Image 1 (tube, helix red, strand yellow):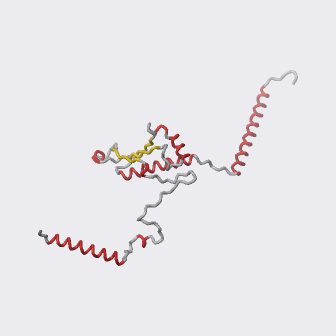
Image 2: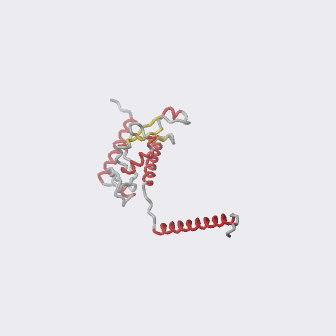
Image 3: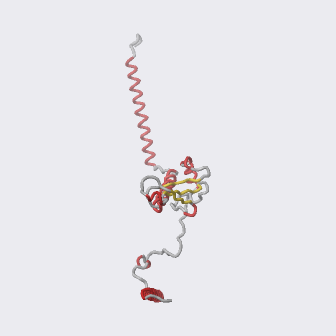
Length: 202
């Protein structure tokens, strides 16, 4: 089989580059742009998947497991040229709310009450986004919407702590309002008494 001169040069170039790469690997050479030189204090290992953060003390950590939600892409509406007709960029994220164990139970119950009109008959909650004409950006926007919604529900469950100074200030305001109300009633009573016609006894 005949090999042209250009093909021979390409094969020779590939062999030389692979040989040089293997030599550099065996010699332990590392570039100045390697990760351990750029981030010497980092303990992140890119070969292992980091462990997902857990929700502690009934608080939502902000982590949404992708293996427990369903992501669908459909056609977007509105302007966008032929890209709208060719590419499905609208993102729909759905998950079964009652069995979503990655959301703490008190937050999940409160969330179900807030979005009860948006849950399907099968119990699925759907979040949509067609903000951009990119699947990745719409997916990020959808997850951000869901994360902000869960955080707002969790924030509504937090009972604010009232300090003693605030309680004392509220008590003084109530006492002052009661005194003002009695003063107004006394003045109104005196006004009514002044309008009465004099009698023989007086």
